Image (tube, one colour):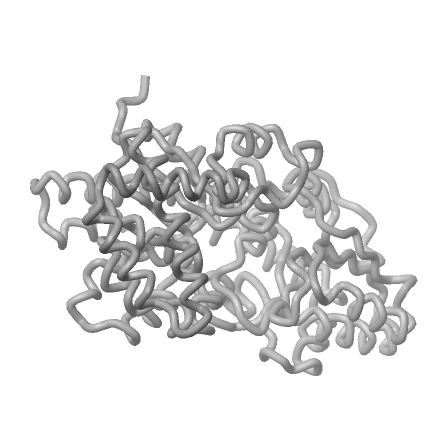
Length: 421
């Protein structure tokens, strides 16, 4: 039987969510290693239970959702906070007031109410450590929870969203207030170092995300080489660069390339992308599936010959790891943390961000050369198995949390945290 390691409260803006399945895998992995992990979500899940996997449905059932308790739940938590720790409540409200300007102070005070809900939930479950994913709203609430209760706080920073609005996300304040900061890439850590005073740097540790390399495996059978099946998975949004992908596909078709592109996902750009496909007369070689759950994405990867993600901004996309673990070579862009995962002509192809000609050139190479796809796909899986396996990386995260526990107990110095990276 696995020894009990300690307890953790997780706070996420939305859980479970189709685009954040890595958080679910992280939570389940920590539990298997002996941690007691309870999750609070600011917002309800993004799907109904019938569209979830069994693990997702179970997490949705047991997760504490703040918004589902409404104004009555917030006022009840405020009264609880006032009676249990009035000084802490004043600290949290004062901090919330300082975070906003003008009408935005109302949002900050709403975050303070949510923080009291989280604090009461943590108190009932005897949690003294809170971990928040993303440096956005969830970690804002987390900072206010700490101001109220004095709990220890850790935050996982992903990028790029946090770096798009550093003042609005109060990112510098969060780096100063958090006890520990976990970065999914060295790029994310470098950006936080740029924003923070040097005395904050030791608390910033790189612990990469990962995928289950025993689940995402290369397909066992081969198939006819043409047409080449291209796959793209992700939120349909300008930052993902999918319009460039459609334009590059138009170039390929004009050159006589044989391919079919499947686009998985939904988002604000869907109508524009579908119109672009129609205008470019690509309807016979581009299919939109809408959002799919993890099992359905896995099936798509088993049928794909190459993966495309021409992002303009990213952290390190987990979907790239899933494709690479499946032996599917990727065409993507060297933005933010992606070059830490994909190396040009070694385990994938990189196209200049925002450059349709560069993207169509690299896609053309991938479509035309089956031997290239095989070489890159094999190297891609090796990279993920060695550096982005979820079991190995969650184990590293567990070591970080254990070091945090020892620090709280006063038995381990700050620099010992680096042993878990």
